[in-house]
Amino acid sequence: MSDPRIRTLKIKTGVVKRLTKEKLIYEKEAEQQRDRVKKYKDEGRDEADIRKQEEVLAEAFSMIPDCQRRLSTAYQELNGILASEEDLKETEEYILASQILEEAKPELPSYT
Image (cartoon, rainbow, N blue to C red; front, side, top):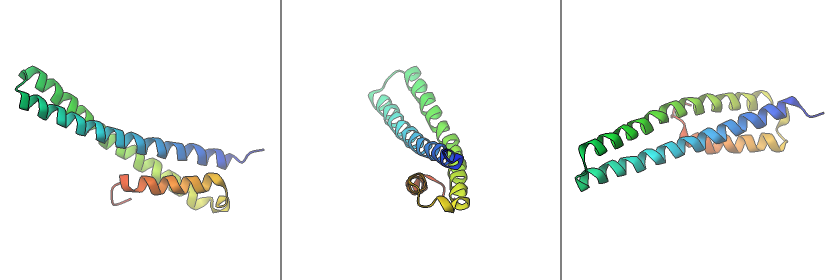
């Protein structure tokens, strides 16, 4: 029978991986939206169009802190699991989880 700790490790690893990707996508989307607003202003588009794009930009930026918070929480949970389950150190899942944590580290605030 499979160890339930391995299943938990897989799930938590997937969460950190997904949230890291999600954060990067939100940041890229916000940057693209910022460029779109600038382009609309440079082209002298209608004020209503510009305001609507600025609303979309604000919404894109508002998603980043929430995603950051969720990523930070998931990172700490997975890190805690790895610290408490060192007997699984030789498993493929443990190694993958360690790699995902390293990949996620640059996306976290410096206090993590």
